[in-house]
Each structure stands twice: as structure tokens, then as C-alpha cells.
Image (cartoon, rainbow, N blue to C red):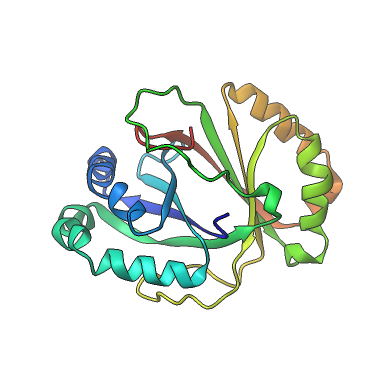
Length: 226
């Protein structure tokens, strides 16, 4: 099981998101996976035309350091970074995460990344900003009660990885008390119904220090998570 996940939200130059996706999916999928990383998914944000969101995972923090060093100092990134970097306005919005429980980690991919031939639903990522560290009770309640009563399939649930960022060339947001969970829906009305149930759950609402960030994500052609 990969125990480290990056949730990366990139702000793209207006009007250039599709260009970014094309560069990314042509050059940066297999080239990262050959070095031990796993591309979980890439997405267009339905509510922000300038946001490109993607997920990648690693076996552990030591493997992350080795793989990132090999990639960013390696031949593929060096050859194509000048195609990607001018399309980026900001790429520092990154959460470094670990599974809430082993059962709530993303399934390990066992097939090559697709090429757009598979149907896709809407992937919804919810970032909960909590008053307390999720280890102080809310994480367990989410895993044992809330996730079971959503009426949705929870594809993954993650909390902060608190280890030092051993590849500081890529900044990450640390020391935030968050719980991030992911689902997939074919009909957003189903998501709205689940949201209404959560809004009526006082413990769920009261645990949050500020409103959650909800990312409604459309998978790109080569996204595994779809």
C-alpha cells in the first residue's frame, strides 16, 4: 500500500488549462511511474476554469524523496519543463497526506493509465478544516460512522502526513488540521443529498473550524480515478 499521497492544486494561466493537461499527460505520467510514483488521477475543476488538480502517491516518505529527486533532476522533466512551467501561475497548493485507515487508502492501480476510452463520473474531494487534529476523535468517528452513513462510496480518506518535507524544492502545506475524503458520483443530485445529510449532523459540522473546500472534479483522459 502506498502510504503517502500528494493532493496538488495548480493555478493555471487563464485559457491554458487544456494545454497544461496535454503536456502533462503526454510526458509526465509514465515517466513518473517508472520511478516508483503512482499517478492516482488528474482533473479539471468544474468550479474553477484555472485549476488543474492531480494526485500522486508513494510507498513512504523515503521513497518519495528518492523518486522526486530522480524525476525533477532527470531527463524527462529537464527536457519538457519549459513547456509546463510557463503555464503555471502557482503550484504550491499541496497537501501531504496519509491514509486515515488502511481500508480508506486508494486501491493500488494494476493497469496502465487509460487513454480516454473509459467512461468517467464526477470525483468529489472534500477538504475538512478541523478545530482539532483528526487523531483526537473525529478521524475515528468519520471512519466508523460517518463514512458508513453517507450513502456514497468513500474511495479514500486521508489526514496530514506530519513527517518533514524531505524534498523542500516542492513546498507543501503542513501543520494543518485537515481530513480529506473522496467519492465518485454519476449524478450530482446524489452528492447534494449526501451534503444535506452531513449538514444535519451536528458533530460533523461542529468539528469544522471553517467551511470545507469541495472540489468537483472531471477526470482528464488519462486519469485512472474516474
